[in-house]
Image (cartoon, rainbow, N blue to C red):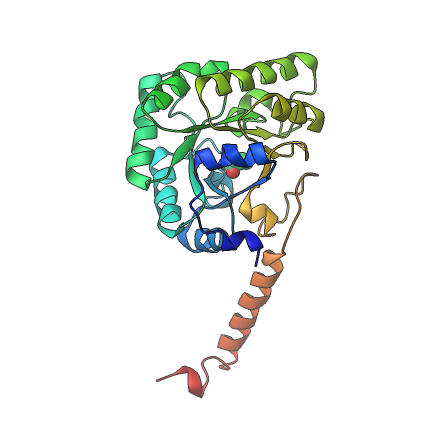
Length: 272
Ligand code: KIV
């Protein structure tokens, strides 16, 4: 068990900023359901993200785009019920905040009221400025997300590393500055060159959490199914697998099938 699990004080957005000041790295992982969120929280995770990656790993969609607000609220509620210590962030799904800041605020309010999560995450910079400002003005903390933004996959056409060229890198830096100026409490940087991510983390005072953005940032986030080895055919360079649950689960389930078929299960002690 991680020694960080012994610190039972609730993680807040303010505490994350203090952690950055102290140089303490921030741990963040996705969760989508009660049982896993309980284990992840008890293991000492700082931030639990109810990511719209639920679309991929829970619902089996190819992209995050089909995720609805009602579905995010269902996952958010399940996670919040389990969590005692971690800060819980819920993604605003595609189509619930872009282009209409009034709708963005209504979406964020539904997430806060119905899930009891503590903040929301939105993908984008200058393009979603009005939405971010309006949500922040209602007292809802916002985490930004720049670099590879999976909700824009149809614009990119590929999940390759972003901001490798100067103009995209400059826009990312400008967007990160803007998100901080507006009052976001942290930013996720996904799949960008490590030196660019480190530069943003050094310049900004709010925490920068990376996924495929190198070690020079203030914290790391991974998708739970990937790091536990539940997904098997997704192996980007940035992913470290900490377990092979696919193998463990397949073995256990196959054994159960064998035991039922052979009448080994249930035995005398396993019945009334
Ligand atoms: O939805 C998600 O899981 C995310 C992470 C990849 C940061 O946004």
